[in-house]
Length: 435
Ligand code: 4AD
Image (cartoon, rainbow, N blue to C red; front, side):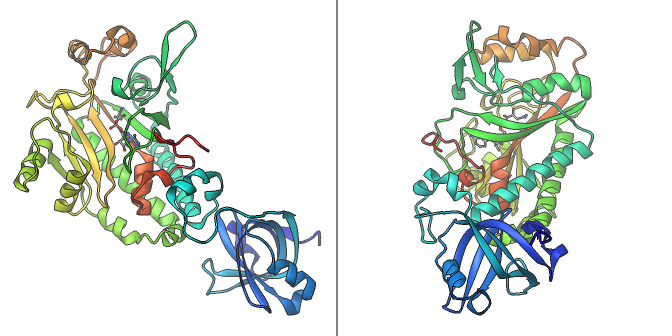
């Protein structure tokens, strides 16, 4: 037996018509008194294993027939091509060994409520749909890093414990930090990225960010992964071009690599490919407001555009839409005031269709020391803790722009999901910290 190679399900094509060993878990089992089909899970994929009484004999066949869901096993058999199997191969079992028992596995093939499943997240990760979502997430993360790396952006790992507020004072997690007062969990890496453009011009960060937002919506997590990019000498208009190219590239590459996963999720890839085959729409906040008012919406200057209204705009344009130049009071202190209309800032949010909503927030940054100090004061933020950030405006200040993309929202869009809670292995939400 020792010459039999142990393989994983990513390497099946190299081993067709060979006898191989595969280690994994009993995902499911069905069949008759003469043959059983065991779904074996390994490396996020499922292989059909055919167990026949005639080959295995009465005792071994009976043992297999009574295997319980999630028992871990080692199987040996001949790998053959089989068009009917979802991954194109089947293993014809010749011998097997039990590795670990599993009894009364709580997640059965019947329907379970979402609260139950979330409280079983440590086990739920093994279910077919969850396997697919996490694979898409992993592929997308790789594509994101690849995009920035191949486009000469330098990775800057920004801190998670911070002393200054990045976005808004209302949504901070804070903790005591020795004798230095409060530290906050980062809402964004942006302010630190801005320091690094003076050293590296084009930089990005990609990591967990935290918002103590009391929102229980389908698109809010208290801990989410944001990828942010920042570029020196980049204007607002150029920033939009970069975002569009970035989003289209990572979607195209992820869709190309995740065909089987999208099939499990019943997400038609052509829907996404259609969206990214055309230029993204661009509308000023002011025009968006007029459009929404013309549709009978009760919305006035300064109001946020809520998720239903965002979707009305996506419907109008038949795809993703950038909404740009928001009223300055609605946005963060660092955004550059629009010289052509000082009531607004040079920012844009990218809104995804299919009920997903805002996936990117970005802007050109205020580069004047005086203006940004004034903005901090207006927002009643403690200017002294931003001293280092303000110094960037003293030593060779330049026009610069950047953006942040919430990866769970992009995953939800790619996977065709209505909620971000399944798009991260262990979602953190207002009412959930377990497991
Ligand atoms: O628009 P936001 O707050 O922008 C920033 O944090 C900027 N500092 C980014 C930058 O310019 N470098 O957040 C950016 C994106 C949103 O568009 C959304 O996709 C996601 O982060 N996001 C969330 N995702 C899940 N749960 C939450 N609570 C989120 N809050 C924001």
